[in-house]
Length: 626
Image (spheres, rainbow, N blue to C red):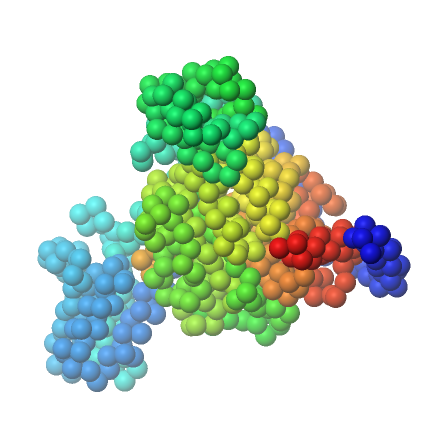
């Protein structure tokens, strides 16, 4: 029997069977609508709001570092009680190699008042002679001698910020004091000034770029962070070309000779050409006139898009920072959802980003080898912090007694480094990263990055991954604008905007009719390079919540297609704003428990079933043809 002959009756039979398995409507969890300020803020208002968010992120990160330092002290005391001085010295030196922020530790003997000082190999011993540090350490020692804890305020020394903390042992015979560097606060502030677009797009790095309006491609000047919402950036001496017919070697050499350049870089169906002496406009004229391509477009630059409701059902993790800082998990019903699924190691989430800290203890065993598109010979280490933070939201170790809890317990993260140390990357590198992830088994791809210009080149890569049944999730952007951001606005991509802890749209979050759902994105605590933790805000933080949910759904029901997963996430939400879909909240904020409850059923909604069965049959036929 031909495929066409047996496919139609099978679809008809399936539809008939479905009539007796319809689902009843679920209980309405619609959130009380909140007033939405639709008037566009003036630049100064927007800047002040974002400065406030940045201050909250820095303040929250300060609290995270202090809690983490106290746990480090307790760990040191447990491990070194009864050990010799040489053993203590070896252990602490090894600890300081992976925890550079622990500048100096002092082991204090309360019986005789003596102490042993251990300074990290990368630290500056001269800091110990600074009057503020000497005074704080002296107060810390006196506190331990009195069997009391101690924690100093932060202070500036040689341009760096530090604090001193001390804890006595339970029996009062010894204690530990530590001088902690808070370089992470400077890093978070610098990172968030770019991420929240408080400054123009980064000037650092090796990029020579121009700025254009994404609608007209007319040149514009970016002077302030506010200007970014109407700007897209491209490489002024490069062009992306998709030919109607792929050029052969002779034609490629002809192009290289005409342009006096190297042969073009090819990815998929598309080529990127670089010229040292021709602008994009000149390159565009050349290819349009001589080669009649299917399309040409600028080679755009992409950047990061970062920026009580408690029902535990017995799923309260013991992670140090969970109860105090991770409002985002109970707000999305993640804890309840763990009662249905904690994930599966067979469902991989690719984080196409700045890389990941591969040595972070709270990500141990959760990170696959991945790929570095920026420097293919190197491992995909994170030199920005953004990708590590995103990875921790998805899959930081749960119930290990330290740090934060990820949304999934068992799903692995595949780091794909496409952005460099400036937090920027090219259309080519992002597209290559997406294709690589799709070819290497990713079931979900998180894209916490974006630009305001459509790039057919990138869209081709998105379609390629979507056709391989990958769920693609992307952040919408942090400019409080309705302008569609890409790749989030492509129809194959699931677009995510950000809410705050009150379930309001975060003041920085982009919005628009293309937004699918909301997820927490304000002061989200997660992993950070150097075995540290940080609180960051942005739609970059909202997107991995949804990627994690997609991974949990594909873990509980591996038979669902990417389209079905996306439909499930849209339909099973906490409805915010106006009933149904609206441009400020999409369909609403994700509800992990509700979505997993729907996903675990052995059937799909009536309106989805014919497509579901057709997709499954097509997949089976492809396998038979191989």
